[in-house]
Amino acid sequence: MSIATMTLFHSPASPFVRKVLVLLHETGQVDRVELKTINLTPVNPVAELNADNPAGKIPALRLADGSVLFDSRVIVEYLDQQHVGSPLIPREGAARWRRLTLAALADAIMDAAVLTRYETFLRPQEKRWDEWVEAQQGKVRRGLENLEREHIAELHAVFDVAAIGVACGLGYLDLRMPDFGWRERQPKLAAWYAEVSQRASMVATDPARG
Ligand code: BEZ
Image (tube, rainbow, N blue to C red):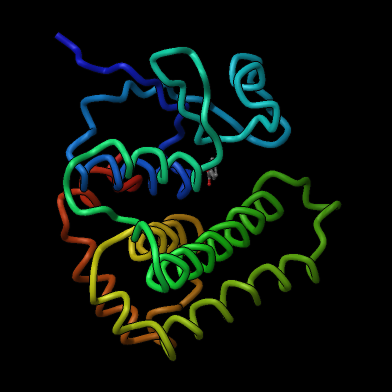
């Protein structure tokens, strides 16, 4: 019998959805959520999702009482307060702001990579804007350089909201921008990612597994 009381609007390729799924696995809550797969692009709105989230974006989490949480930052904060293990978002102090800022950097990398994907895959060839794609990829490059230069020790310290975000962002680069070549430029980050990719939560949510 299912013990799911929540519904997660979901697409396996979305790195923002994966972030939520990895947190669910890491905190032992995966059985509490039923997945509702949405075939979503910015030009393919889904009425049921729009009714719950006017922004029409995933992830969105419908709770048992029918209320809906979005976006991924709000959902991970909510879910992190629903389990009894060590919090994956520090509750207070300098560590909270440090880890949330690192998580925001991971989100920015994902954002720029997803926008690159939309521009290079969805938009008709004749309407593509190369400078804009280059600018998005520049954000990804700068973000990865910053992680390599300043945050490797923090990533190794704990697999929390920040590390989960970075891992999901790197997974998305491998999925949608396989020729980006980040491993050659960021070898320390690559070594860290090789390690965390083995975690059960990352293996179970790997979009390349289908
Ligand atoms: C993708 O297919 O790359 C994708 C799907 C949903 C959200 C973001 C990205």
